[in-house]
Amino acid sequence: MLAGRYRLGGVLGRGGMGTVWRAVDETLGRTVAVKELRFPSSIDEDEKRRLITRTLREAKAIARIRNTAAVTVYDVVDEDDRPWIVMELVEGKSLAEAVREDGTLTPRRAAEVGLAILDVLRSAHREGILHRDVKPSNVLIAEDGRVVLTDFGIAQVEGDPSITSTGMLVGAPSYISPERARGHKPGPAADLWSLGGLLYASVEGVPPYDKGSAIATLTAVMTEPVDPPKNAGPLLEQVIYGLLAKDPAQRLDNAAARKLLTEVLNAPERPEPAPEPVSPEATRVVPLPPLPGEPKTDVAAERVRGALKSVRNAAAEAKASAKEKAQVAREARDVRSKAVPARPKSGAPSGPVPPPRAPLTDVVPRRTLVIIAVVAALAILGTVLAITLSSGDDSAHKPKGDKAASSGPAAGGSPASSKKGTGSQNPSGAGTPSGQGSTATAGQGDGKGDDTGTGTGTGTGDNNKGGGGTGTPATTPYKSSQGFSIGLPAGWSYSKTDDAGVRFNGPNGQRLLIGWTDSPKSNPVADWTDQESSMTRPGYKRVKIAAVNYRGWPAADWEFTYDDDSGAKYHSVDRGFVVSLSQGYGIMFSAKDADWSKPETQQTLAAFFATFQPA
Image (cartoon, rainbow, N blue to C red; front, side):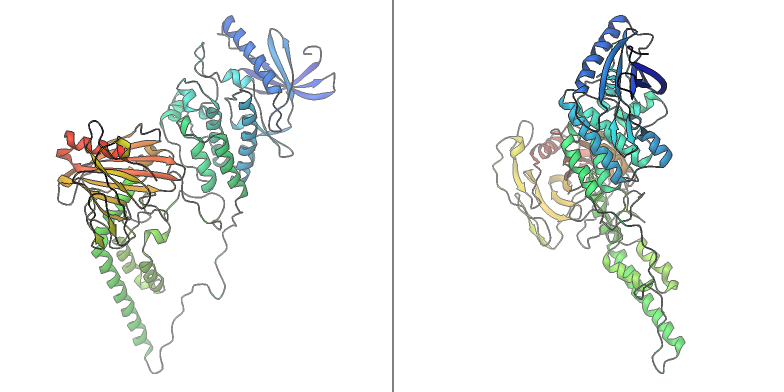
């Protein structure tokens, strides 16, 4: 009997420093849960008193939380020189048990769970309470479907803001935020990171980080990108990436996460894939009858010859522009930094989905698709068609409206552009006038289908407004029709706009390319590292891929050398950064490797970084 009132029964569970008992409140005749605070054997008396004091203070604060997703605290009693917390008993499974026994959650159900946890975290954070142990085993799914977050109070003690005075960091390593793992003082953002890990586990069945040992897992939490979730769908995936941002300042806050989870919850149900069509409109191979008076064999042979001729013509045309198109796509891949995949149409099938790939119309031009549709009816032409596509245009697989916006190799071959006739054959990152418009100078540009910008300046002012600051050359501001602006030093001019982005040419073979996306990835380092596996530039050699401090935005530099078509060695740095959930940029500067370390080259690069302003 505890405190002459609570009769302990069986053990419901054990955690880092607590044991939960089933008990009966003899006074009110109800079943309750009682949590016993336990201390490690190595703890000294001062630390023990401190933990007891904090537990009692926080338990009182938790009792003030009025939220259906929080376990109600009924009482705190002192027995055997330690506090015992008496609280509501929730009959049901933990989320960890539900996933293990019943399978992973759908994105919609995961969003329901996430919203319930966000509600109680918001209430707790308003009371100054940080949970610090949000994980699937601490979320109960009641028999009536109610979602309850448990282990308040003790979790506050167990998840001390940093390494405790006894040298312990208590909690599940897979769900400890990067700032806690580094020993920094956490805030509400630490609980939201743990929620991101919980959402990941609820749809994937495994935690976002699990390397087999606490040290290895914590190291991965601090340094490695998370493996892309396969079952989250595009909307929930955006929430997961936003919550798992390593920098707490860049992490989704409660309101932003709530908005996105509500979108997941309200998204239309996606039907299961339909069976193969059997209607009269279904695609079928039907032999065409010969015209009256024509021999059947002659008709068939003539049609095959005509189809072969069409494919040969298409192949020749594709090969003629393949080199030009491949360059634009390489540029597109080099400058992009994509945060989350573009949202698919609501008719996409639900359930597990593979990593996002470019749609076929991004990989192959529509004209070529027409050829495929015609020739596919004649199986004998399959090999010819494969030869045609292998040297044709693979896209930069960018979402509609982006410049160099997406990531990953295109399905089926090396990257190339899907826009005909606008690419450059120079792999250095600089373009040449396309012949469709005039080259612009002094910050002006115009061309058919290209970007148009205007600007005037005298080279004075601060670095962010187009002037020449200390150590950087004076610049003339250039304003792009996309909305961004940048300062151009003397000798620089607008070249053109193509699939990769907006191109500028400078003296001594220097080039600048600016690309953008409306769906950036939240981790530029991980994105660059992922894209490096698809790098096709001749003579490519990585110098570094590293996070950089750029105006407080998530940013990373991908620096490398390569050989251009003439055999000259070039040096490039591509800075990818995320301005918002819907806007990311890449600034790629290239110069001859022999000139890279010269002060004037580095000053030019610094001027571009200093004067760039997003839309």
